[in-house]
Each structure stands twice: as C-alpha cells, then as structure tokens.
Image 1 (tube, each protein chain N blue to C red):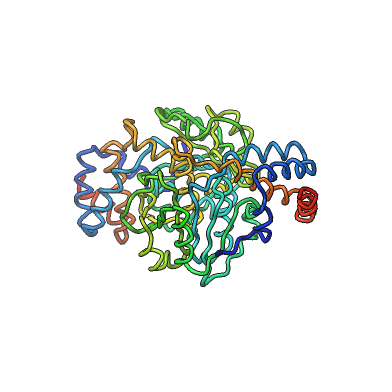
Image 2: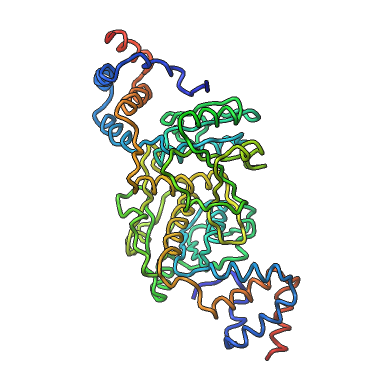
Length: 236
Length: 236
C-alpha cells in the first residue's frame, strides 16, 4: 500500500457516513462560517476522475507547482514515485496547496500503476517529443491518470512501456518543449475543463466529500488533529 | 510608432509580393531543405489574430517564458510596455524564441492600446482575481490582444480602465493564483486551440508569410542580414 501524506489516514475509516456527517457538524463549530462555505463550494469541484502521477521530479519547486495546479483545477489525488528523488513539495511555490490535495508515495512506477489500475484508471503518459495523440483528442470517459516525468530525462522506459496511452500538447513553434510545471498546468486545465463540460460523473461521492472536509477541517482548526480526536471520542 | 525588435524592419517595405517571393527563393539557397520545410510548416500555423501585450514584466525569465509560449502556440506578435521595467527577454528561458516572434516596444500602455485599436484589435485584460468572464467563454471572432500585468501588482489602473473586456482563468482551489508565465501559457493554449478549431480566418496572408520567412531566413543564414542585403541589391 502506498504511504499517504495524511498521517492520520485511517482516522475515519471505521465511521459510517452518518457518523462522519455528525462529526463534521461538530468540527465546523471550531471555524468560521466563511471557511465552511468555502469548503462546501470547493469540495463540489473536487475530482478523482483525473489524477496525476509524478515520476522522480528533481526540482521541488516544479513538484510544488504541479500540486498547486492540481489544487487550482480541483484534482484531488497525486501519486508520487520517488525511487530516485525524494519528494518534498513543502516549498513556498505550493502556497500551502499540499495541505489540500492528497498525495500518495509509491516505491516504484509499477506499484503506482498497479494501484491505479485496481481503481479503474487508464494510465496516460505525457511525452512532449512523441508524435502521439494530441491531448485535445484524448477521450476521458474512463478515470484517467496523467503521468509526468522528470525535467532531465523525461519518463523512464518502464513508465512509458507500461502506460495505456500517450499524449502530447499540440505545439506549433520552433521551441517544442515546456517546463514540466507548465506542461502539467496545460494538461490539467484542458482535461478538467473538458470533464466539467461533459456528462461524466466526475464529482466525489457525498461520503468522499464529507471525509475530505474532515481532513480540511484539521488544517484550519488550531491543534486540528487533537481537537478532531477528542470530537471523535465524544461521538463513539 | 513602436520600436520593433527587428532593426531591419523596413528592409522589405518597398518590395512587391512577387519580389519578396523571388528574394525568398534566392535566400533559401543559403540554408537546408529541412529548414525550408520547417519554415513552410510553421508559417502556416502563425497568427496575428491573437496577440499579447506585456505591461512592465519585472522578471526577465517570466517575459522570456511568455515569448516561448507565444512561439509554441504560433502567436507572432508581442507588444511590450516598459515605462517602468526595461524589457530584455534574451535570457536562456526563451530558448531563442525571441528570434522567431515579433515584439514591439511601446512608450506606455495608451500608446500600445491605440496602436492595437487602429489595427482592429479588441483589448482583453487578464485579471486573475476578478469575477469577470471566464476565458473559456471569451468570443474570439474579432482580433484579440490579451494583456498580462506584472507579478507584483498586476495590471496598472490605466491598463484595466482602458481595456474592452476582462477575463480570468477558471480556478477551483484554495490557491487562486498562477505565476504570470503559467497564466499566459494557459490563456494562449486555450484560445489558440479554439481559434484553430473555428472557421475564423486566423492565418497570416500569403504575403505576410513570405515576409516572415525572409526574416526567419536571416536568423539561420550566417551573416544573414549582410547576405540578404546583397541579394536585395541583386534583385532591384
């Protein structure tokens, strides 16, 4: 199983949906109505229909910029493979966005792909120099995991071989490459806009939304985890 | 009149279209067939239907990254206002893209807008924090100049007041801002894709294409300007 950024991953695993809702009611007394409305608005726009895989991103400011784009476009899950580079997106570029998205660390690319395939994802590698499908033509009827590689060498052979499909961003100029963070922003913008304009059922389930709001709550409540554990004990 | 990056701006002004074509025929003997094919392919994708205005971009790597995006998406003209910051995109981030796009320097934002209005452009300011039209809903039937402001303070009051319309990129997350170069890349990608998929007459005229190829030629011929001047003398 991959490691997740939330140390308290299992915290709400035993609760029923009803109990989660009750818990969130109580937790939300610890923060403002403004925050509550913000959470309600943003959680509606979150998706796991499109996810991101980052393979050995060397520069942490690039990793952080990708997390920021994920947050901006409502992409909740980021899968990180760091068999060569330690992933540490807690830089200032992320502007705290690592608090709002979920990232999962995998031991290698095969483990990441296996995990995603079990969840029904189609794995799509982004290859700026290949003449494959334009991203504007990629069908997104199936849950889609977009794989981005390192700045230096692109994706590993394994990451390419084992992908289900390949896309590139249409480019028409002399300079035919983009920085990884621009490439990710362009891809995510295009695909999430397409997704939002479609009939695809892309939103989180109501229970997923409530669980996510519980995690978000802990980010805005002072001593959030401690308070949440206390409320949890009261409830059970 | 704005200053253009090509010092030899007027070099071909007196020529007829026929003469330009003859001159290009001769010039193209000085470079490879590969380059010639590349020019033919890329010039087909160039547009002046969408242009860019940069107001006082502080960081030259951001200015360079915007030029690079313009080149990648086929946007030929960049208008630069530098009443506070000298514009110097000749950094390595542009990967030489300043050789392939045209940029015009204007004394102030009013001069830039005036120049563009005379050429029939609608001036659209990008305002990340305003609740205006989403860029995905911007009509592009008219030639459109997109205005991007500085990293620190955004667009000046004048640049905002005197614009014809305002757009923002749809964002759904906690962090509601992008770096200027990402913002420009997202805007240009979206609008140029929309333009290419439309029936709009967005390409350069054949004469404009030939003129542009003459300028491109000088970038790839050794002592390009000298050689071109010699060929020009021979022709006239």
